[in-house]
Image (cartoon, rainbow, N blue to C red):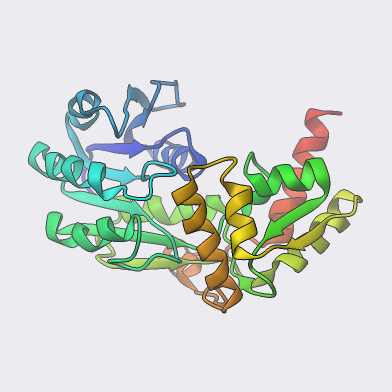
Length: 286
């Protein structure tokens, strides 16, 4: 493990950031939990942080030597705000940066791909986490989760394409190691679950677990972009719909051993995740 220092977790109330902050504090690390509002996070120092408000950046960086970077949500060009911050972070004493990207976005690719490409030139110690699509998209507040709960529908333009869906807890476990191990990865890490599933498979598992019919409704890329444009900016909706086209072509049909290799334990299956969330939901409403 690295010497004691403050680890800045950006997006500390989000899907992976909250789990990463929890894992770090549980292991005894000093954590500064950054979000748009300085919300209490168990064991961490809360600090207000907004990618688009540079006035919030110095306090977040003060005394930090490592940073977990969650890009601004829904921004098709996050490099415009992230790269100036990263240069400021380096000047402030940050020596290790771990970036959350996506398995669908290589270095130099669209959106956060530009930040990935720049990271090795900014920090000697770095890693880029490139998880496949989150299992939590089907159980949280994501459009897929709402579609399952409210309509019994999963809408995609992915066709029969298969995805190595990954649990956010496994992503966070890898992030903790990347931030704290003595040897930094110094590369990008593609993270998947233990198997690939189609969205027909997802609908079948959801049907079995909930006891309510769930179907996969196949849309064209254009129809999906139009549907998503009701929730996110049109340009970002087009980007997301285009990723489904890549899934349909087989871009995400792969399984890696990264989670097991880095953390020493097997990644969680989608069924195990969905069953646990369904049980938790039943308890909340029981």
